[in-house]
Length: 89
Image (tube, rainbow, N blue to C red; front, side, top):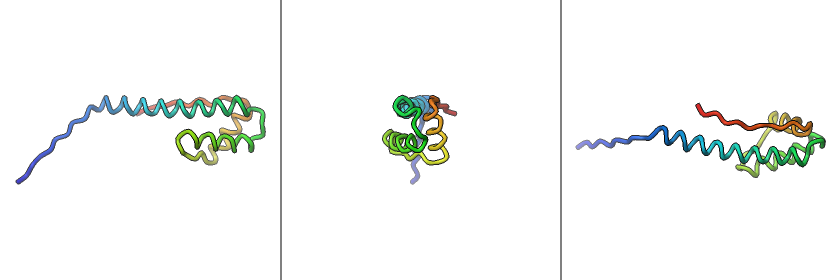
Protein backbone atom coordinates (compact mmCIF):
# COMPACT_ATOMS: atom_id res chain seq x y z
CA UNK A 1 0.00 0.00 0.00
CA UNK A 2 1.39 3.32 -1.01
CA UNK A 3 0.40 6.70 0.28
CA UNK A 4 1.27 10.10 -0.98
CA UNK A 5 1.74 13.26 1.03
CA UNK A 6 1.70 16.58 -0.68
CA UNK A 7 3.17 19.75 0.79
CA UNK A 8 2.72 23.23 -0.48
CA UNK A 9 4.60 26.30 0.63
CA UNK A 10 3.85 29.97 0.32
CA UNK A 11 7.29 30.98 -0.94
CA UNK A 12 6.41 34.66 -0.70
CA UNK A 13 5.51 34.31 2.97
CA UNK A 14 8.70 32.40 3.71
CA UNK A 15 10.73 35.08 1.92
CA UNK A 16 9.01 37.87 3.87
CA UNK A 17 9.73 36.15 7.18
CA UNK A 18 13.38 35.63 6.20
CA UNK A 19 13.74 39.26 5.09
CA UNK A 20 12.25 40.54 8.33
CA UNK A 21 14.56 38.32 10.38
CA UNK A 22 17.57 39.56 8.39
CA UNK A 23 16.52 43.20 8.92
CA UNK A 24 16.11 42.60 12.65
CA UNK A 25 19.56 41.07 13.05
CA UNK A 26 21.12 43.74 10.84
CA UNK A 27 19.52 46.39 13.05
CA UNK A 28 21.02 44.78 16.15
CA UNK A 29 24.49 44.76 14.59
CA UNK A 30 24.03 48.34 13.34
CA UNK A 31 23.19 49.50 16.84
CA UNK A 32 26.28 47.76 18.22
CA UNK A 33 28.54 49.34 15.59
CA UNK A 34 27.05 52.80 16.18
CA UNK A 35 27.54 52.45 19.95
CA UNK A 36 31.18 51.44 19.53
CA UNK A 37 31.73 54.34 17.13
CA UNK A 38 30.16 56.88 19.49
CA UNK A 39 32.07 55.68 22.53
CA UNK A 40 35.44 54.73 21.07
CA UNK A 41 36.28 56.77 17.98
CA UNK A 42 39.72 58.25 18.27
CA UNK A 43 40.95 55.45 20.51
CA UNK A 44 43.73 53.04 19.52
CA UNK A 45 42.65 50.32 17.09
CA UNK A 46 43.70 47.54 19.48
CA UNK A 47 41.39 48.92 22.18
CA UNK A 48 38.52 49.30 19.75
CA UNK A 49 39.06 45.70 18.59
CA UNK A 50 38.55 44.37 22.12
CA UNK A 51 35.35 46.36 22.64
CA UNK A 52 34.01 45.60 19.17
CA UNK A 53 34.65 41.86 19.47
CA UNK A 54 32.82 41.72 22.80
CA UNK A 55 29.91 43.85 21.61
CA UNK A 56 29.56 41.88 18.35
CA UNK A 57 29.42 38.62 20.32
CA UNK A 58 26.71 40.02 22.58
CA UNK A 59 24.40 40.65 19.64
CA UNK A 60 23.88 37.07 18.42
CA UNK A 61 26.70 35.04 19.94
CA UNK A 62 28.82 35.18 16.80
CA UNK A 63 32.54 35.84 16.81
CA UNK A 64 33.91 38.61 14.60
CA UNK A 65 37.35 37.48 13.48
CA UNK A 66 40.22 38.98 11.54
CA UNK A 67 40.58 40.39 9.01
CA UNK A 68 37.07 41.84 9.44
CA UNK A 69 37.59 42.65 13.12
CA UNK A 70 40.70 44.71 12.41
CA UNK A 71 39.20 46.41 9.36
CA UNK A 72 36.03 47.41 11.23
CA UNK A 73 38.01 48.56 14.29
CA UNK A 74 40.24 50.72 12.08
CA UNK A 75 37.22 52.37 10.51
CA UNK A 76 35.47 52.96 13.83
CA UNK A 77 38.62 54.22 15.54
CA UNK A 78 39.02 56.64 12.65
CA UNK A 79 35.49 57.98 13.14
CA UNK A 80 33.92 56.32 10.12
CA UNK A 81 30.43 54.85 10.40
CA UNK A 82 29.93 51.32 9.09
CA UNK A 83 26.49 50.71 7.60
CA UNK A 84 24.95 47.24 7.66
CA UNK A 85 22.75 46.45 4.66
CA UNK A 86 20.72 43.36 3.91
CA UNK A 87 20.11 41.90 0.49
CA UNK A 88 17.99 38.86 -0.13
CA UNK A 89 18.35 36.97 -3.38
